[in-house]
Every structure is written in structure tokens, then in C-alpha cells.
Length: 441
Image 1 (cartoon, helix red, strand yellow):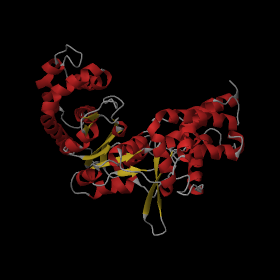
Image 2: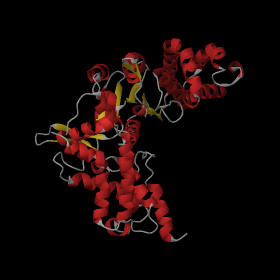
Image 3: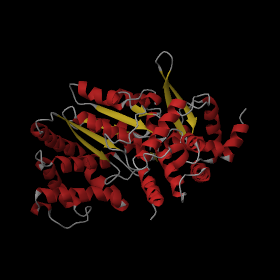
Image 4: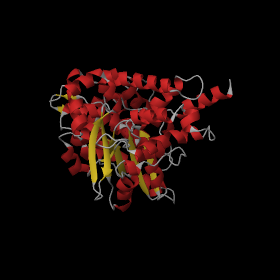
């Protein structure tokens, strides 16, 4: 393989869009000043430090905006301040985002706390709870093993099998919920006994416990009559969500934050913190150079680790205009930026990455967005494109959930945070959108 081919391979993998950066990664770019001064360490971390009692906070934003990377920064920040932090992505092993309910989340939290803290505290109260219900649950864990005959490690393993089936075996999912639902209060009670024991035995350099549950924002909206699964989890079950005896942070779907229940969320959890897009254009449609520079820096950091001596604008990309177009078409959405860049690299046989490769990556992504929009929604997108505002309506929330509408923030001359909305830039080139824009009164 030639050195150029080897470099292309390294660059292609450097733009993996589905791998959040760990805390302290040299590729991380601080975009706070082009995101309306949003700072997770101040908005979530400082509140946890100052509070005398346990806190329960919500964190939201568009999928792929960079929330997981920010939450991993928060984990590092808290650990540097004597916190023991359990972080996990709920949809990786235990929860199906297409069909998630509160019971699934509680079981996922239980499994992960057992797994992470079993060597610190005594998990026996939780395992006793499991033993009492094992006769009902063992078939749903797809095992005939008698849990009484196992050591602690194996008992926890069997619990993990049960939660794994929540995600992997749809036909068992509701059966597991039906068996566990009547006992969620007692499960929380024994889980808190375990947590209390853990907190007594934390290492000397740790004096508090925090749990961060990521990727709940990926939950797909499901309606059952007038109620939604979002309401069932974050409102109907709020007391149970908050009941664990530690500091808690849950990610929440952005559509829930912009629903008619937003004030209820605020009353229960305080204001949910939202991670907006990197602002690459102003509300008036002009290029916002500070934002573009940050987006270019996101690309440059990942390239420089493998090609420190090459010019990004003329040796990696064929022209500065090609690079800028790629940055603008991302809309300041980090995952879209990585996807577009990786796709353009995947269409490149030899450096530099050409305007043609970038154009084809943009065209491919634009077609995906075209398929995501229902026919009656084109007029809504046209209206937002003109007004830069959204209406509190399910259709607009749907368009935010699938990233067709993006949120931006900036500080005005008085230092006040201003919020505005726009369509994803990829949508601007879609014929149906152009026609809807022309037909606006």
C-alpha cells in the first residue's frame, strides 16, 4: 500500500462519526463561544458541586451534536473534584431506542451500577430481590440455571442476560416489563441500600457518587392514545427517575424539551440544558466566520495527527472553497461534519480531496434528508427558513428530532442569549423545498 493510500485510510478512520471523544482528547475543539456560551461544566457540573442534596438534571440537544463528548468531559471534571462517576450509554446493551419505557431504564441502571460498583459495595440486597423473582424471570432470561447456586459474579451475569433480552428479543420485552413493573418501588429501595453501602466504602479520594445516563435522547416518540412514551418516562415516572440516592444526569429527547410539557419538566428537574449547533451562519444568512473557523478546526485537528506538515486547504482538500463548502453544508452539526468528511474521503483515490468528491458526498446526504421529510412538512421548513422561528407543534418537534431543523444561539450586545432556528443547509438544494419557498405568500 502506498504512503498516500495509507494516509487516506488513517484519515477515513479519524472521522468516525459514531465514536465520542474521551475527555482530554487532543482532537477536542472547544466551541463554547460559537454555541451561545453553552458550558456543560458550568451549567451541570457546578450545580452538582454546590448542592447539599442529590441533584437530577436533564441534558438535551440534537443527536450527533456532541453531547456524549461533553458528558465525558463532565465525567472527567467531576472525577477531578472527588466524585465517583458511573457513565453509560443506555442504548448500547440494554435499551432499544425504538421501544423504550421507564422499566427498561431502571433495569439498565441496576445492571450498570451492579457491574461498576460490585467490588466497592455489597450488592446482596439487589441480588436478593432478583432471587425472590427468579422463578418468574428465569425463562425470560432464557436460562434454566438456578440463581441460588451461583456466586455473586454469576448472579450479576444472569441479571445482565435479562436486561440484554430487553433490547435484543422484542417478543420478550413486554413480558419482562410486566413481571418487573409491580416491583419497581422495591427494586429502587434495594438499589438505594446498595448505593448507600457503596458511598460508605468509596475510595479516600472519592466522597460523592454521580450517575450519567446517556443516549436516552435517542428514544423514538411513541404515542399511546393521548400519552407519549416521553411523558411516561420523564413525567409520570419522575419521582422514580429521581429516587436513586446519588446525583443523576439523564439525556432527554429534544422534542420533549420543546413540547407543551416543557414547563412541567422545568418544575420537576429545573431547566434542561441544551447543546445547540455551532453557528456557521448568522440569522440573516451571512457566513459567521468565528463558527466556520471552529468547524474547520474540528477537521484540522483530526488531520494534523497524521499529516502535520500538509496544508489542509491545498494539500488535503483541493481548494479553500471546497473545505468551506463542506463546513457550511454541515450546518455546524458535528456528526454531519464527520459523516460528510468521511464520505468525501471514501470517494477519493488520491489526495487532495476534490470538489467533486465533496459535492457527491453532499448530494448523497441531501437525498437522505429529502426522504426524511413528509410531503406536508416542506411548507413548514420554508416558513422556518424565512422566519427563523418554530411553532410549538408536533410536526416541528418531529423535524427537530430528525435534524431537519437546527437550533442556534448567540450572545447579543447586552450579553443576553438569543435563540434562533433554521433548516439544515442540505435541505436548501432540494427541489421540493425550493418550490415550497416560492409558494410562500
